[in-house]
Length: 262
Image 1 (cartoon, helix red, strand yellow):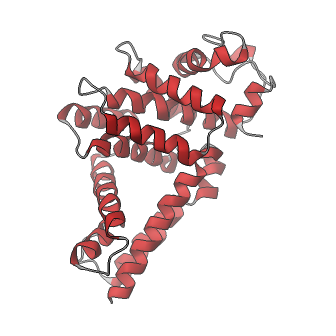
Image 2 (image 1 turned 60 degrees about the vertical axis):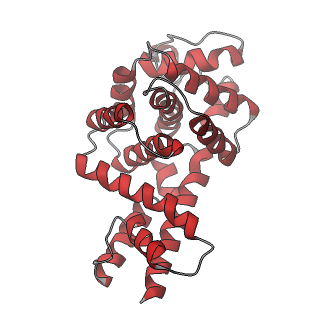
């Protein structure tokens, strides 16, 4: 049973108090016919660590995504389209979709407690680097939805990475990979050419000067880091598994492109 079904089914009162609890409670409570905002840990039953982390990840992902979208003062049509597409790809039920939309809207508000949400999210994830990296990747994709990252968005993303203990090096590498993934998708139907090959290396976080050994090492590392089953076991919401699968497919396609080029 998914974390959402568990809560809707009434197996628990709520998963956690604090900032994440307040944000999700405000976005979710009315669907249960009661306001869950502010309920404390002591008032809940044990739902297991995995579902607890899944709740935290879902809550933080969509609320922070909304906060980033509003970072430059307005939310573009492309940013809304991106968030909607993510919800579509996840195959959310109507109730989960409503919750995701409400979380996005909550994140846009000026009083959204970003620092507190991130601090609790980091704690709930038990410093699981692969999950935190996946989270930052989602936020980067959202920021790039309208084609570029504004200064305000960049500063906010760096602030997020700082709170989640994601290094500047890892952040810059994620940026390169995500930009390359977006361009590489555009080359997908074309015969291998210089630009698509360059972007294939970028998807793996490399440059065309990388050796075959470096390419293989990067490929194996990324496939391990983004393995859907491993991520779900660590706390990625099951609904987001399809997004992890898409990422590994892009990594595999990029690796195949490089190998075919010799």
